[in-house]
Image (cartoon, one colour):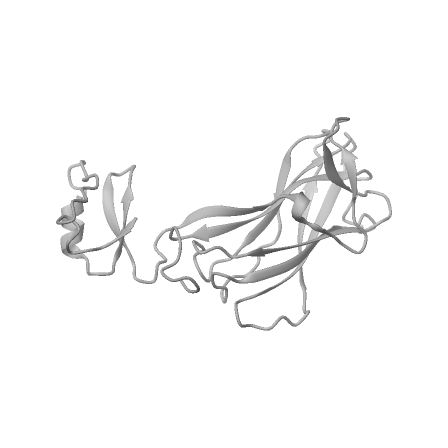
Length: 229
């Protein structure tokens, strides 16, 4: 993807041309669009297309992965447990009677398609073959730059089944975080927790946390300026 420039060919840039009959080639798209338009090349159709001036035409997905080692211990933190009996450790969220918490934060990156929803998700594994569901919960507040945090938190939930298989790599999505008012650079402060006394949490053993992340839509490689899209 690149910015249209009327002198692009004079500068010696020769991107691939569309080579399917009826598809637009580079030259045709340059003739049809205006200075400042964004163009991208579809390697499947071998066609150049213009992205609208609002930067919203592409609908691709990316991920903000957050590895557990960067989390801060919450009011009652999960223990580090052995991963399948090895020296490697992962966080094990208690399945007995103690609610356990980890705190974290993330920033919306500059490729983010502003005003689109965020999809938090967690990669985890059961530590035994016992049956049951685990209820992961995320308490969060998210604000754009120059907005004020209020301490008013929203809780989103993800419920997953163990599939009665110890150490199986599982992933489950939380309810979406509404993004209608979000911009790049927005900051989210959150707590990830499990309360095993919740009636919807029926798995009796430790749930192993692998990674936590945020799937989000992108429509560019970055932003036009340092602080704004």
